[in-house]
Image 1: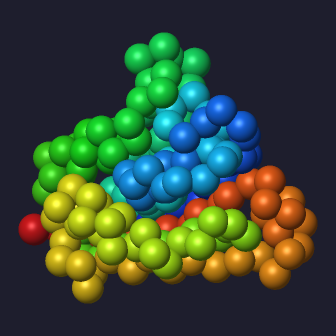
Image 2: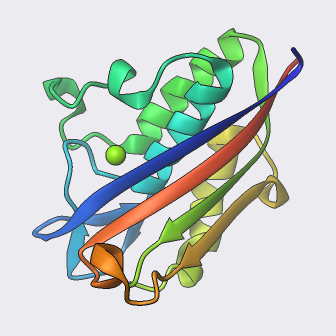
Length: 159
Ligand code: MG
């Protein structure tokens, strides 16, 4: 099997006193995502997509949120660790695509910075990583600005 796809999803609550980090980029905003690590929901969704594609479990198995090691962890370090596993298994990333569903803040102004962080880690050119910001049209907890959700899909291939 040369090519494989994976899907990932993550959701975190917004809370006071937390930094907002998405795609490895610190976004100025009064609230941040609550979680054990830095709660970077975009990176977490990408990690689960990669692990799903390579058949290597999921983020909770590799980096349990009960492990003090991952407390306030930089999620891009977890992504790097996942890419090392993926490469050891003989895979490379063809492309990845992601959606950030957030009522606020605006995502578009930060997409270029996210790609600058994530593309070298994934080993892809900027045109092989899609990141889109969507609102939830005011609907539900996302629309009320209480949570941010992220979806990601990847295509990997055996080298
Ligand atoms: Mg998460």
